[in-house]
Structure formats: structure tokens, C-alpha cells
Image 1 (cartoon, rainbow, N blue to C red):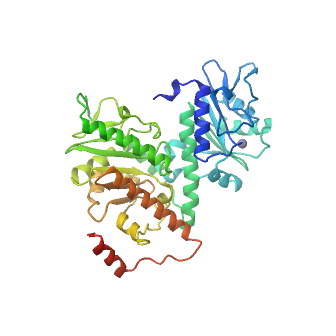
Image 2 (tube, rainbow, N blue to C red):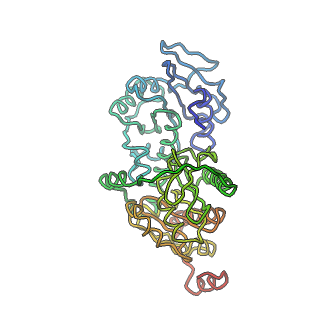
Image 3 (cartoon, rainbow, N blue to C red):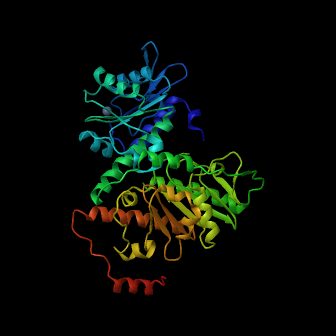
Length: 429
Ligand SMILES: [Zn+2]
């Protein structure tokens, strides 16, 4: 569904509720606005329960300053108007105080957006606005200065973050990615030195990330293919709700034949995927008019090399990724379930390695179902989507436990005798 076809007030209600449900704001914090084609600014109201807003609660500020609506606009409305004044290209502004970004804001640091290519391409460079009291015109001036310098994201000293974008859905994707980056850097910092990517590598990767693919017209849709399409929508939304991915992350795929599979599209909101959004891939060609996730060639190469693999997820869960941006190995010898599901996890040195799909595919075998790519993602494979999803959850939960254990002492791994017992008992290779 194209969410931009909804009335601005409807969009504001949906996204505000979502920010609250995702625990990215408190009941009273945060405000959003959309500037429509008339120049009217639609905005969330002040001091109303953010968990229960409806479209009728939204306020409209006309270009002459007249306010229409049954509530007052948010007290932070001056900086929204100021941003629209200096940046004619922006149509939506999102502001909130999520915990990870506030942690950066109160030590007056900007999160490193170069931790993964996807995050860098989503958020770009981020500016910092000097402290001024909330709701003051001075704060508006300071934020507008950052946006006038062509930044689309501003961290606010001792406050939170402001994102400007071409639509509210784009702003929300950037906002969730910013919060992801902040929590990733915090978690990774517990493990060791956090390593970002150099701009030249990011630029090199940008050119290589979307390989040329031929197209074909998908004339007949089999029942098996339709079932696979729905399966991907359901699991992508479930991964989002379970906090394993954010709204624009992750590619999910399912084999439908010897040389064909279906895969999630590039960049569509993972919560609202519909079967018709899913992209069919056949003999290396893509369904006409659609853009598959950027890792489509890695999915293809793995399916070609491993007939036993029927599903693949490539994504960036926050705790697992802490091991992808530091030199700390993700050790599965913590509890028996982790060892059984994860086994040994090899690591690719950088995102560029993913542009050689055949080499990536060779890394998988019966005792290696998961591969981690430094500063990029984790690749999880299996014989069914449920198995892959379970494996992904076990990996993320195990990673979280290791991060949490750091303040409590040294990890005592299961010894070789214990591992041999597990391998025998569970018939592992
Ligand atoms: Zn605020």
C-alpha cells in the first residue's frame, strides 16, 4: 500500500502510535508534522496521550498562521515551521526522545552513521544543534541552522533528535535507523573497540550494491509461489514486531523451484508488505518492474549451491551486529541451545565481500548455517522459514546475553567434552 495516499492527519496518527508501540517515545514526548501541497502544516497536538491519538486530534496550521483543530499544536511547533522555511524540499518533520539517541544527546555526541552501508545510505551525515529551551524560538533557530547546512538529521544537545524527509514514512525509516545505530554503538562499545567504515569503502560499495539483472514477465503464479509470498510477508512483519529488524532492514527469501525463489523488495516497510510486493527471481532474472533486496545475488548463489537450503534471512539484529562492528567473536558455546542452532559462525571481513556471492555461498555447509559479515549483516539459512527464524532469534538472544554478561564476569564456555556430548546427543556433524 502507498501510505502517502492517506490523508496527512491519518499518516500522523499511524506513525505516532507506531513510535509509541515501538517504545521510541513516552506518553507525552515527541511530535510530527507534514507539509501538504497547499503549504498547510498538519501536526500532532501537545499534551495528548501519544498512545491513543486519532486523525481527529491532529492540528492544521495554515500558511497565514491560523490554527484549525480541537487541540493546540505541540509546543515544539516553532522549530517545525522554521525547518520548512529554510528547506523547501522537505515535506515531513519527526522529533522524539528515544533512549539510545538521548544517551548520545546527553553526552553531546553524534552516533556513527558509517557502521553499516545501509545505515549510512539511509541517514547520511548528521548535524548537532546547540542546546536551547524546548519550544523556544531560539531552539528553532539553532535546529534550522543545521538543516540550512543541508543536513536532514539533527541531534539536539540534551534533548533528542529531529529528522526531515520527503515524506513521513521516509522520516520514520531514518528515525528508526538512527536509534538502531545509537543502540548498536552502545552495545558494541561494551564488547570492545567499535569500527566504522571509511567513506571510500562506502562509495565503492554503493556502486557495487545493485548488480544488473535481466527481467522476465511473471505470467503464471503457482499455488506454491503464492504460499511462499505470504510466508515472507508474515515472517518479515513478525521479525519487525519481535525487534529483530527495523522497518527498512532485512531481506527474506524462500525457494520455490530448482532455479527460482521469491524475495522481499528493496526498502518497503517490513510491517506492511503484501504478497504482490514480493519479487520472483527465476534463473537469475527478476520479475519485471520490481526491485529485489540488495542481497538478491547472495540469496541466489546460496540456493544454487545448496539444494537442501529452502529459506534465507539476511538482516541486522542489534545485538548480533555488535559482533559485526567489533573484533569480538560471536561464540555459540554458551548454552547447549545456542551451540545446536548456531554452531561456529565465520565472519566475512567487510561489506565488499558480499559482492562476490559465489565465495559467500561456499562458506555454508551442514555445520555452518550462519555467516556474519563485518559492518553489514548476518546471513541465516535453513530448510524452512520457521527453522531460519528460530535460528535468527537464538542468535540474537545469545548475542544479547553475551553483551549483558560483560558486567558480571568472564564467560565460562562449554568445554570440548560437553560439546562432544551435544554433537552425539543431537546427531550434529
Ligand atoms: Zn522534544
